[in-house]
Length: 409
Ligand code: DGY
Image (tube, rainbow, N blue to C red; front, top):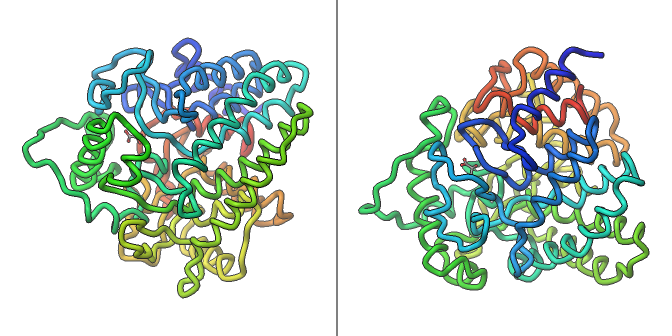
C-alpha cells in the first residue's frame, strides 16, 4: 500500500469532530455541505458506518423548505467569521442560510455501490430528502432555466471571475465594520480580497434582513447570477437520483421531467460567441464572458460541445497541472488566489467522473496523474498553483484526502 493512503485516512480522522468532519482545522471549523459529502466518500473506503453517519447528520439539518444548508455550526468557534450570529438563522444547530453544490445524490449512489447491503437502509431514508432538496433547487433557483445563486458562497467557487459583474453591483455597508479570520490562518494572497468580503457581507446582511426567505432573496437580493457549475452538478445529480429511485422501486417520472427541464435550462448558459458555458447576471441580462472551471463540469453531466473541448485543451496546455479554475490567458488569472486560477483536486475528481463516463480515458488518465503528482509532491492541500504546483490555502484538507482514497491515489 502507498504510505499516502494511511496519511489520507489520518487527515479525515484528524478532521473528525464526532459525526461530522471539518474541511480543515481553524480555517473551516464546521460541517460544510459538499466537503462533508466528499469526506463521506473517503470514509467509504475504510469505514462505511462512519461514511453514512456523516451523510445522515448533514441531512438532519435540512430546512423545511428542502434546502440543505452550506454550513452547519455544530459548535461555536471564534476561529471562523462569519459565524452563526452573523447569519442569524434560527435552526438548532444553527446553519447558514444558503446552499452549496448538490453533489450528494452522486456520492450517495457511489457509497451505496461500494456496499449495497450496508447502504440500502440509508438510501431509503435519504431518498425523500434528496428529492425534496432537488425540488427546492428547481422551485427556488431555476426560475430562469439554469441554477441561479443568490450569493457567491452558494456556488462553492466563491471569488471566481464568473461573479465579477454581479459583485460590482452590490452596495457595501461602509458603517458595518468586521474582522476577517481567514487571513489569520492562510496567506492573504491566496484568499479573496477585502473588495469581495465587503460584498459577501452586504449580501449576507440582506439575507438576514429577510430571514433567508428564498423568494425575497431571488426577487430583491443584491446578487443573482446563473451558475454553470451548480447547474451541471445538479443535472448530473438528477441522473443519479433517478438511479437511486430505480434501485428503490420508486416512480421516477417526475424526476426525469425535472432532469429534462434543467437540461433544457442549461443550454441557456451557452455563450455562442465565446464557445463556452457562461455565467450571466439575472438582474441585467449581461453575460459574464468568463471561462471558469464550472463550464467543464458540463462533462460531469455528460454534456460536451466541440468548442468547449477546444477551450479545455487550450487552457490545459497553458498549465503544468490542470484544470485551472480560471483561464490562464485571461488578465484576471491569478494562479494562487483561491478560485481565480488555482487547480482544485476536488473539481478535477468531478470532471474526471464525466470524462470516464464519456469514454475519454486518455484525458481522464492525464488528469488523474497530474492531480496525484500535486498531492505526492505537496501533501493534502486545499488547492495548488497550476503553473508550478505550489500548495495553497488550507493544509490537511479533507476533500483532497478523500479524492486521493477514492480516485487518484
Ligand atoms: C469561506 O469562508 O471561505 C467559505 O468558502 C464560505 O463558504
